[in-house]
Image (cartoon, rainbow, N blue to C red; front, side, top):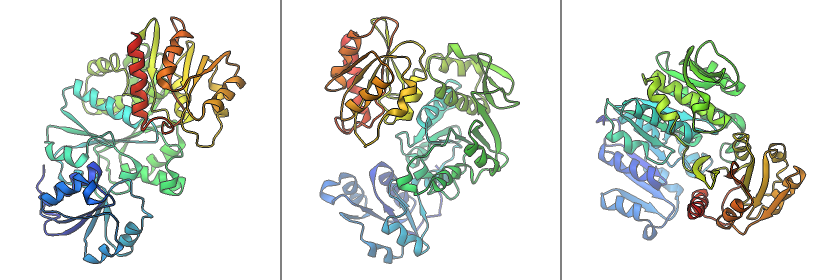
Length: 450
């Protein structure tokens, strides 16, 4: 960790706790700042705030009092989930107080270079693949960011011998100033988080921040099949490394003639890759490019791609049970994610789907149900998804009370050679606290049948 003097004796407000806020507050305190923490949760119900109080950090809990901004703060470090239209943030900007996220702090203190990954879909899988490939290549990677480990905590432990592989959301990227990854990846761009950003343009602009500080000595790995991504690439100063699943490229990473290639060199046969799906090929290509640029051998990359079965709850291969291949895609909380999952399979599919009703119909799913032989639905959207299934001509459609009860039905209505796929196309909150809980219940029910 670099011992920087930037924040010594400066008044800094950490707005919103969770893991990132707690870590940032403790770090700034260590760096000599006069830290105040402000969190909505009352102190009596807030063990994280109580812990910071014990360290000698000023804590204000239970509300976000706007008058706090009159106390002469020189910087605000905000929780990424707090939107910029929050009165406290609007007030700070009006007063000219800089607002950052803790990712910026991580960069400023880190001795290790960063490989940063963002995009609408595929961030977690790509981040995990990059980490696994660098690990197989003995490059001492550390993993951080939106994937679950706080960047400024990881950066405190990192040395020059490490590389920090970090997943970044648009929320985090809006709060950077100097952050400059040696390698950046932009997987893809689709409309998302418009309730936070307001417009598609603002959302895309937030994603583009990943490359805003890069120079010609850095690398920007981009999806060459998307015009919006390439527009961002054209405005970048970094060396552009394109990837494509659709065509052979003069340079970069691409799929062609049954192989994955990098700069004209064959790396691995597509048939040897365990992780299914065309969308995952894009994730693999971008991760492979980052690994090659980091000096990882083809052998190490092949080792990962012939064994990596997916991130938990993201088209995760559970195993072959009674001749059926079983996949947990509980993270598929929207129609597009389920479309991508279905496109990964050519064999007959038994699809388990359903969940929270957000008011939409499921007609967009119909063209992609061609290989679905049996549809089992559950949750609030059960009837809506069945309606789409009937329009698609699926012969066997039934309903279960929940995911756990759907599993034995799926085995009963399938045969060896089929795929059993949980890909709900809906959020979980009608029946389960999180998509992770839903996926765990699915896996547990499958394991009981092994």
